[in-house]
Amino acid sequence: MKKFKVLSLAVLVVFLLAGSVFGAVKCLAQEEKVVTDQGWVVFRLGDPRVFVKGPNADKFAPEVPRRPADGAPDVTVLKIDVAPYTNKDGRTMVPFRFLANALGVDNRCIHWDGALRQVTLDDPAFPTVQMIVGERVIATGGREIPIDTAPELVSPPGRTTLPARFVAQALGYNVEWDEKTNTVYCWKGQRPKEQVRDEILKLLGGELAWRSIGVSTANKVLAPPGGHIVPGNGAYSVNGVMVIDESDGVVCILTTVGIQPKATLPDGTTWEQQMATLRQVLERNFGPGEFTEKLMYMAEQKDSQYKNYPPLQVLTAPDGRQVMVDDDGGGIFIAVKPPGVGF
Image (cartoon, rainbow, N blue to C red):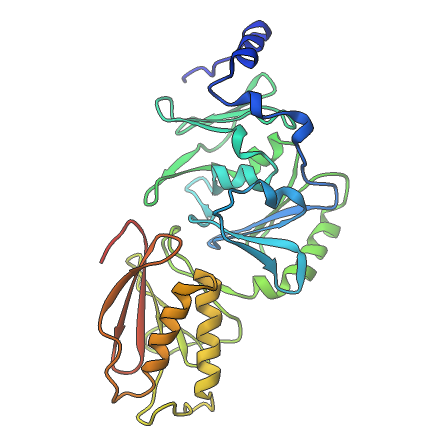
């Protein structure tokens, strides 16, 4: 395999004095604030959210959407553009920059060498970690350690993913897989895994109840709990709002309207309840703000099967996903595609 570059101490000093191309000068140990023994990180398969308890949330770039977890204000929920997935080797893969940020690595200490297809994490608060796409080796602590899987490229949107377990362990974390909730959780210190798991389930019970729908790792739509599967089309329905995976990378959000304006649905769901649920779905997936308000306005205008609204529109969501909005007769139709994939 390609050998990782190992710098001698003398060469390293020269780089530090001259200004390393890897930005090592900026990665000062005294600046670092990493996860405490009471913090943790949770990834869930197929879910574009990362849950971080502790200061590591501050490591993410400012443009990464974030909010406090429902009912747990000391836990930060960050939305990433490629959901964790299981590769052919059965390992949970996470985009390398988001994985490193969640584990406390500063953005300035995360490097991608496109020519070598090599990822380097050189934060002085942690052991240095290097991996190459396609190579089943992790270099850390001056050693090259064989592993049973390799970094991969996911396109769209063009992300390099790393095996969460091996990277977290190389950075000094404990790592556990919870099959019941399809989650990987990482923490530092000596706390028993059962104690950590119980705390996570207690604090994140409401968050983990949301469903993540969509086959594309780059295009997941979250749907609230309490729904059911609609016979025939397989849509997940909550209060008249349906979320359906079209199996071609497209996920659709639909409303349900009656003949009379703002009619109550046969199951007793009122128009107000349906619109409140739609707002929940849109804000959870696109964030509160102008984009969600625009979609809500169009949905509120389509309050009857006899009303033709809106005209077909293709929009770009704040996270880069392409969104087509149309009137499908029985309600508003919102189709969502991954970033960079048009209609």
